[in-house]
Structures are given as C-alpha cells and as structure tokens.
Image 1 (cartoon, helix red, strand yellow):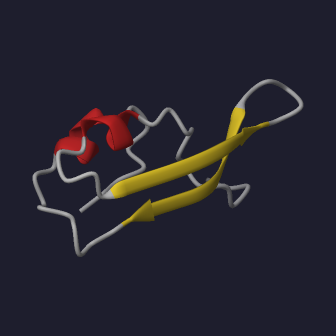
Image 2 (cartoon, helix red, strand yellow):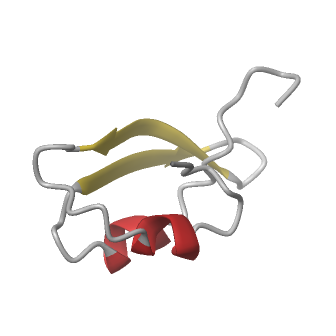
Image 3 (cartoon, helix red, strand yellow):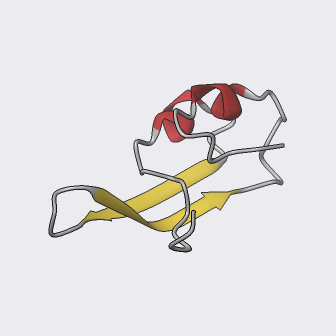
Length: 64
C-alpha cells in the first residue's frame, strides 16, 4: 500500500482455517471502527504449506 500499511485487515480467516494452527493474529480497533493488525505471525516450524491461508485471505495479504 502507498501509505506503508500492511494489507492484512485482521479478519482472522487464515488463522481459523489453518490446520496446523501456525498463524497468530492480534488486532486492535481504530477510531474509525476498522481493525489494525498489531501482531501477525506465521510459525514456519508448524506450517505444512497447504495453502489454505492463502486461499482464505480476502485481500491477498499472504503470498507464496
């Protein structure tokens, strides 16, 4: 993004769909009511490279 913000909108769909429970997302609400990601972590030691998170992400924040 031009503003430098990450694409993640903290919907947590990737976290919910991950069969290996390798994704952790923490977020806080902004003044305008939208969410801001404060922590986004993919534990690559747990990841099984299934691609479900990439498919679930509505904003293409996860890429190969």
